[in-house]
Image 1 (tube, helix red, strand yellow):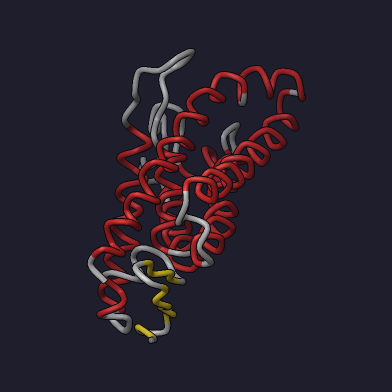
Image 2: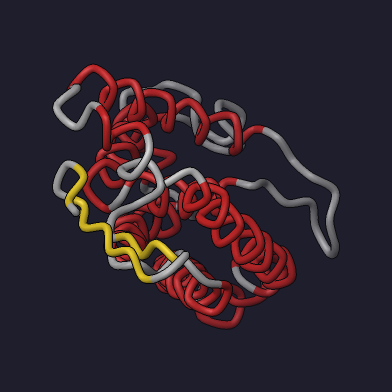
Length: 208
């Protein structure tokens, strides 16, 4: 049967779905609610701000959960709402709101966006599109597929951050300061998502 445009196929006791977690829960009942979608985008941008401000003790450097939140929003919302959420977040930062990590101490507005971390911010947007598209096509249902989706999203963020920073300080320094210290935390976030999303789908499927 069809639920608001999302195909549901019953195969024994297993339910295979297309669409994201949000599409198959909240939006499956109110797919035409622009207010709900607006609230999700606003809430997502606020969550991104909070995740940028809170540092978690980790090795070799403290980490924020922002990349995890970026990719999780994409997997939850899908590529359209996910991208809109990132665009709103970037727009908030561009007009001078202190939503980014290290703001306002390290600058605000466009000067921050075009600074050393600008590549990572661009990577947020592009990874949300790719990861959201993958999630809409079932790449958050199993541990293996979630690992792949998170790896691809993380790679996009790191790649754009590394290239951007390389232009400013060179390739070697870019890797030492912009990539290497965050590799272990990236692995942790990928593994965390691989545990959370398939489990969430199992819980959802039990109620269908």
